Image: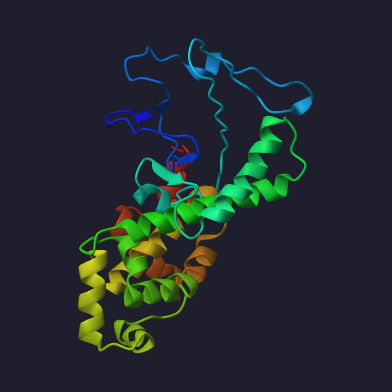
Length: 260
């Protein structure tokens, strides 16, 4: 399996591949085989069943089951920082048993063309994604930095959980350090070293990301968005938004909607 500009990744029976950003990719028995657009090979199933592709010949029979996990968020931050491709061996690690047994059940239902428990299959897809992210985080080298490395660090991970779960709270670096149990200087240095920016700047940028999502995806009043992401006044929010996006939120929203 291969994405554009990257080396091919061998995939064996019993392995699961996740594509966090849904990049275009090629699946084949060899890298020197001419690729064919799968769009023209899809065979719609009757009575609302599963679409299928039957293609190739001359080699060993291979069965591949595909699915899609979506989100209502316009910009899923974690998908943008994960690698293009995550590979999971179903028998690897302490969680291998539940992955193997659960997806054998899913594979049997899918290959038989019936889905008796769609809610169960949807939850399995979510759990698989979480497991893939956890395994990737555990595999990062000790010197790694960034958001995923921050989740692995005990102090920074707790700080991120506090910031994300209580975004509207008037946080200060001092209060966060007290919550984590570190001195202000030690916490600030550790957070900045791993995350690449000080905690209050991270919080401000995170609030702006949420604001941009809501401005783009809704018709909510700007004052409400400002209040619900932690700003005491619309004027303060407007100033912060302008610093980040170089225009006021009203103009930015209009531009995103294609207005003139």
